[in-house]
Length: 214
Image (cartoon, rainbow, N blue to C red; front, side, top):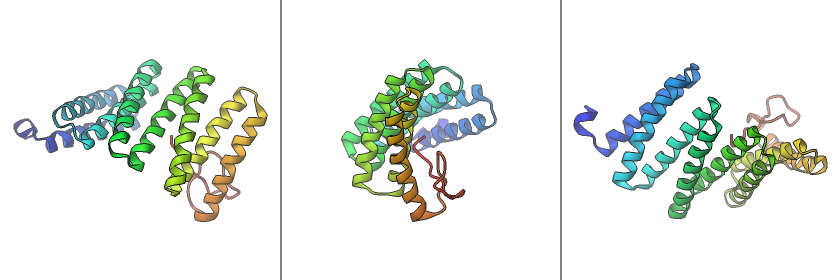
């Protein structure tokens, strides 16, 4: 049916199905099959972007690169993962320039975070810190503008990642400062909600935990 119609809507649906199948394969531990589905999804999303140039197509393409970055990172191919994350970052920046939404802005922070993790795994703490500081800058701005629970969680997690880097560099004073900033935000979340899953650690209550950007 799709081969006969090939409308933009049909193409987008098929790309989404490939992406969902990739997610299932990844959970099952079949990374090779997951990568195959993600590549098929990316191919269709790139085609759709070239044909329509819509913001939805651009966002889908960014997500396609992000998915491939995740799977290649899981396979230990960090150089490839970085390439995909950089492409996602470029698209997210352009998207934010065009539509300026909070969602588009947060996507930039997510891309910076992915790149920071890659650098951290490679042992390049200076590069990792550079990316995490960019995450922090975006997260602060989002928290100031939106003030949502998600923005507060992201900001808390940004402080945590920077604290971790400083601790690995044995700069314990700055590590403590970042951890305390993260703790204060997580504690506020616990007081406000009492049931949000947290990462890392808790706020004095086992069920009061706050997830972050990752």
